[in-house]
Image (cartoon, rainbow, N blue to C red; front, top):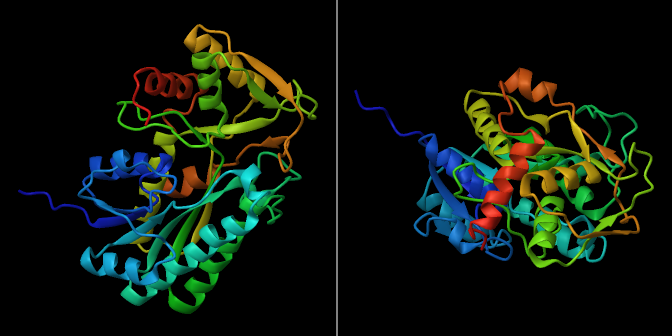
Length: 330
């Protein structure tokens, strides 16, 4: 008996880091995928050219055209600018791309009649949380423009559900890291702002990486973050799509492991895996950096059945380093 192909998913920002990894997992699971990306920060080579539609999110009519030509079961929305420091220098760019772009996407979905969306949100919506691990019930308290832009989109989603019946699942990421274990996709941002690839770059170039702040109220003075392997994160998106297809109401979930690692602990893990010292220097704190962000992801695990398989720090570093040294970044 022939097994029917699963339905088509539209992935915005699918030429980026998490989007390209999620696209691969969807295809592996039998979904059809169409990717929308304007390639301003994504990579053309990260997507099968037959699946790529180069469209700006602000082009509502262009999005409607794509959705009509390739009818979709649901949308997974990654396309956003993500650099906290940059958002504090040019907030207008972040609100235009992240908020107005999302509004354009939602408008197109309503026009076409697509009523299910998985949204790439962030732990930055919590700001400086009073309690760690952080539960989804913690209040909005962003301390940077990037986090504020994601709060605004979550609020848009609430009203689009109330008024248009567009159901959504928001996944609030902590720190995505690592690369596809099969070496098909990995992390490559320009400019690069994520810690682990910056540590790799320092090893490869000999140019010291700056670690921002060693005077936080943490055991070793450096910031603590919850690192989640990109493959595990991609799996959470697929489970979210399946939940919406099964009739789930709109929900919000933390996507993290519940275990935090300090900057110095990550540096040690990178040195252990690579066998190389990481040239580094200590700089001042960055504006808007909370000392500790660790998820309570119990709700994601219990309600959607999500189980992290690759998110121990050594596997994260090993897969990322393999991607780095085999020359697959681009």
